[in-house]
Image 1 (cartoon, rainbow, N blue to C red):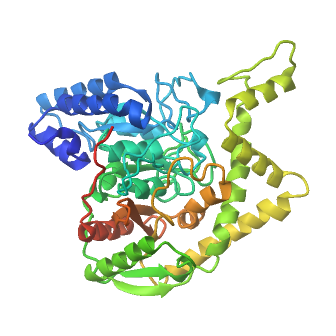
Image 2: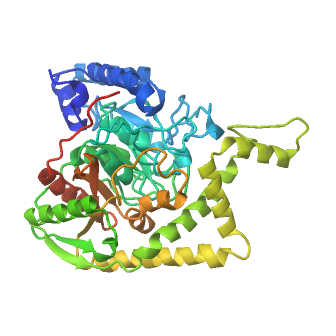
Length: 495
């Protein structure tokens, strides 16, 4: 029998439903991989093998009774530790929330459990989802399962903030996982590790029960081995939630059934502003390859302009820290989470001591930036201006979509870099989001699909951006790339 951990969501669901293997057998196989890789990769903050087995037993019992299985029936997944899970520690990878055990379930995780998925554990991430390399976690770095082919042994970043999710999927510790994307935190780690991930339209997936970073940008989405698996999982995750005021009150399309790699009659836009001076040659080649593949799929290729792209990154790093500054004010040591109360300290001293002990350096940096741009005298100069730029970026996309159906560009400006390589250079780290941030500011659906390997043998991703609510168009273009790229590379097992 095929190694069960080599199977993705669709294959597992089909095999369980047909009786080829049981859901318990699948859960046991992935539980074993999680345990074997933990010391080397540090992808999970908490493993929950008993939860995976319990859900699998329920699915096997349903099958035995002849009941229909859910969209994720028998599929064990990893849950990014930003989603509240009832009875299981939820930390956002921060000391501030270490030991916090919610008594409630996030809407997204509840939908996945209802669809028949089981939880293998809570996945590591950058603290409060702030980072591009998974080096800001209080619980230690996540290590990518990939290695460069130059004979060196440098530990590589799995991307961020959803680095635990990307590393775990690439290493076959889980067939799929949840991620969240604020400025590229699903797409960039997917590109770094050779997997697929989609950020849906803002509001498609509920934010209720998800630890907040930047509320007008945060969006949950699936990460998996391929486009089909992402479509299946997104169907299970999405849907209107009255508990979330930003949730879209729209029916959930049947994205899996609508998958079609024939792009005849479709137009693909290539943004000229994404061709930057000094661009990595391998990234540029993968982009050119992607354009050729889309032509082969029947698409017409047109040149488009997104003129305010150059302002997207600075606007994002004003808006996101400003919202983070507001959201993280709730961690004060009074109601829940860490409390540091020095002897004889007053209330203000407790606030200061708790936040000093609980927040990491990158979180503090973003709080300081955000508080500054929101302060009297600077609000209009920075925050208001950034919001105006955001509107201009959204209008750029609206104008572009009058000429094309989807937009294709690189996901990230480089392949994975070594851990420690950029950690002391915030600007270099922030530049990892340069291609991902515009779609986030506009609230558009966007996904990363593996496009090949660079000369060092590391994965590169191509990004597909679509109109608001057109996840189907994004998935179909992604499928066309996936079929023609024929990406089957996987990291050589060393852990």
